[in-house]
Amino acid sequence: MLTGHSEPVIEPRTATSARRPSVLRLMLQPRIARGALRVSLVVGTVLNIINNGEQFWMHHTVSLWQAALNYIVPFCVSAYSAARNEAQRTRGG
Image (cartoon, rainbow, N blue to C red):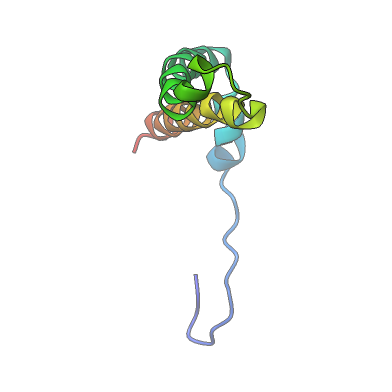
C-alpha cells in the first residue's frame, strides 16, 4: 500500500495469515500430491505420445529431460490448482 508520500506501508501479519499453510506446503500434502500424480500420469503419457510418439515407434532416442517434463509440468499445474483452491476454501473466499 502506498501513502501520499510514495513510501510503502508495511501492514502487520494477522494471526490467521501467519498460521495459514503456504501453497507449496499444500501442494505437497499427500491428498493433493496423489491426485496431481494421477493427473500427471494420464496427461504426461498423452503428451509423450503426441510429442515423442514418432521417435518411440521408430526406436530413435528420446530426450529423457523432455519426456520427464511431460509429466512434471502437469503435476505442478494440477497440484498448484488444487492447493490454491484449498487455500481459498479454508480462507473463506
